[in-house]
Image 1 (cartoon, helix red, strand yellow):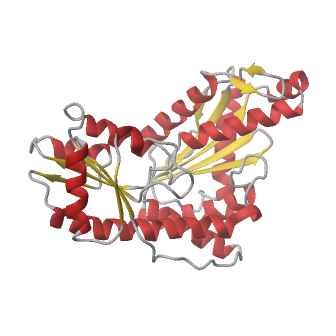
Image 2 (cartoon, rainbow, N blue to C red):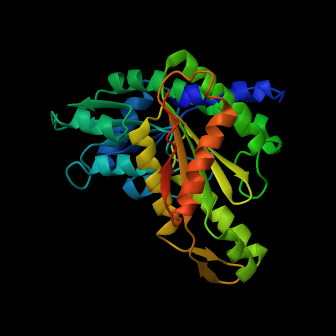
Image 3 (cartoon, rainbow, N blue to C red):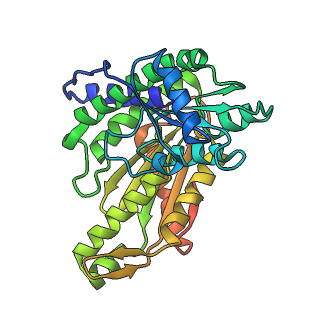
Length: 339
């Protein structure tokens, strides 16, 4: 889905006339080994170095969760399923998947104990592959080769998309995509849904009583609230979702391959992450409590002629207005979205 999403964004950039950027796929992989103990890690590293090129380092659990500088995080991790405690390698796996610097890394879990439940558990959490029994460097090297190459391809595509879009379609305050790009992108989502019949969702989110924030604290604090709102929203959507500053204090989220239940869960999660914790504004060293109202429309079948971009936005906008009218800090669904 990530690869498809990046390709869709690349195509949208081309449609907008933005120049292409050369992609570099040839580079040396950085691989980190996290084993149950230092000597085992060194043994795994030695065996792997005999079978593949690359920078292979042995680190501990804490080292894996360091604040990596941009571009310095390992491309791949080989993680023992049992480290200091049984199955705590899975906890590390979950942590690595949750952090921006390591979210896209290749992760292979090695289970010496051959626990029959390890494979489904690790794959559910986000492992790319699971090996079991005695450490087999040939098998792990064989698993790593295509996984790392695919990661390089997706990384290069992601970098190319970012470079092409740059400031032409980015909001300078929040760094999110702007309305111009959203319109081009959404037309592609609608066209793809017409071909595949996959559902998709569109959300409009508006900060409640935002004018009062500007009037009370000033526009510098208002800007900080918008930036923090964008950060929280971005941290709580999937990579395949598109988050846009739609204008002023309004945000738009497009969610491909999303049905009613998934959209409902996502919208409620986003409402909570804004409302539950006040936003700290350094401009006046104060905390600002803010809530958000959300309107959602879901297209659950191949869009027909009624499902135009403007029609979908209008439906979400009506639902947003209903959330405001009913008391704010609410999620409301449009009642005209099903195909």
